[in-house]
Length: 274
Image 1 (cartoon, rainbow, N blue to C red):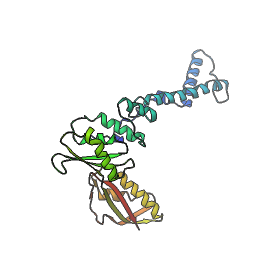
Image 2: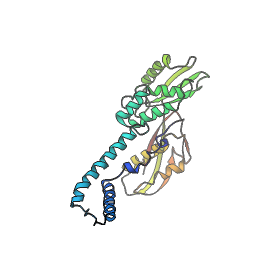
Image 3: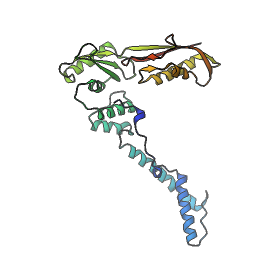
Image 4: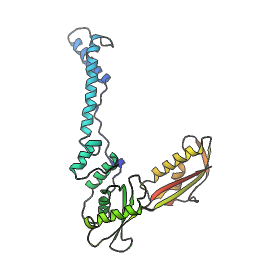
């Protein structure tokens, strides 16, 4: 099981801890009016500038600010919502330390992925988990039996999602060989291969093509993340961004077919527009 950010539960709605000063003040005004009516008295003047307003509205502001702090303190108790030093504390208690340069969401997913993974069987998921604990490893795909029945191969990317260097891949292998390798497994490590998809299209637009190319590239990379195939028609739809009226002569790697993505590769997208 691979956990994604979209899998995490949303923060539940807590209306009583998410009130504005105006909402709190209005509740007090309604109470004051009701109390005055019950006593047969005229309601107090509550508009801005009146004594009632000057006395109670600052208190409403203070309570609204305290509610925000209470909400923040509440969410920090859960690793699925915590951030910064609070997330570090959750990781430390579970024996998972944040790596240098690791952002909150990457660290969070690594912690949760460990919680959902039963360690010790020596299968692909174990090796992926162990490699991700190493400083400088940002992503890893493990494959069993690619070379022979006892082989385990790890394809590594760095913290920016790019293939690691061959030297660093060898260092990872050396670090894991004695401490993490299950006896009998022939472990090897590699920089993740780069798989290039070239996108060509003619756009009907009056906008500068350079800016459009960068935007389209990012959209395709986002779409391709975690996928084993780029669907031709789906990628075509990504061309229709603000400023683009239509397109034609659209190809992926020179054709009009879906593109299979090697699971161990890093996707790179070249966008050529005319």
